[in-house]
Structure formats: C-alpha cells, structure tokens
Length: 187
Image (cartoon, rainbow, N blue to C red; front, top):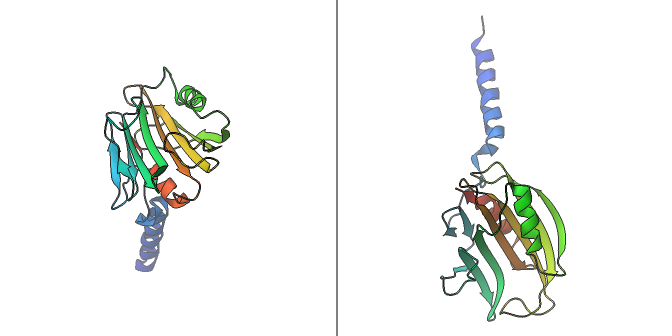
C-alpha cells in the first residue's frame, strides 16, 4: 500500500513533468499573438506584427501580397512583413521553399533552410537570408544590411503560402523576430 508521502511525491513529480512539457505556462506558444501587437489575417495564414508597424492597405502593398505591415523611420521603410498566397505551384513545403528562395533579391546570402513548426501545418520551412539594401523603393538606405526570414509551406487547401520578414539590421530585435515567427497560424 502506498503511503501518503509517496502519493504526494508522485503527484509533485507528475506536476513538474506537466510544467516541463507545457513550457511552464509562460512565453509564447506557436500561433500566439503578443499583447499590443496587430495581426495580418488572410484566408490561408495569419501573422502578428509588433507595435510601431502599420498595416498596408490594398492600394499600398504589392499586388502579389495578400497582406503587409511596415515599420518606417526617417521616411524610409526599415522593416516589412508580407503574406503571399498561391505564389507558386508546389506539392510540399520543400518545393515551396525552393520557389521562395528564387524570389530572394539577387546577391542575397541564404544563411540556411530548415523545418519549422507552425500552428496549423506539419510541413513548413524557414529560410534565413541577408542582403545589402539598394536604397530604392523607399526601403532601407543603400548599403544597409537587411536580415530576412521566409516561412513557407502549404495551407489546408494545399495552396502555397509565404510569410516574409525583411528588417534592416538592428531595427527588429531577435526576440521580436522569433515572436513574429511563433505567431504564424496556418489555416
């Protein structure tokens, strides 16, 4: 027969294990929108953007983007988050990633491509890259280093999606970049 002390220890151990498995209940889980942030919502995917970013209307963003938000400083766009849907024909996240890489600016350095966990899909890729800004189109000043991330895969309708984050180096913190990634929800 188990003693009350043994039962209590077992319950405490089970509780600690539950906290470890759930991440102790703190921090952002995938698909979570941090307090005070906005959200870009499309039929296939949503993504949060930090305070200071402004959502672009249909007339402001590229015709290829289903949604976009930008951060401006000194009259220049220093960071941009975009969502593209159906940007290529693909049967897997790997194929979508190949197509997304082809859309990165000439001269960019692809730092790596890896599997990424996104809420709502079991098959997504993350592409990290850097490039030197051209200074054109209202973006960062010529020569500024830009860090980029593309998250891509297939939504529940088997349509491709790409969430792209471009930010002038040092203008979006690494922590905020990870919160943006963690906020992505695929439908």
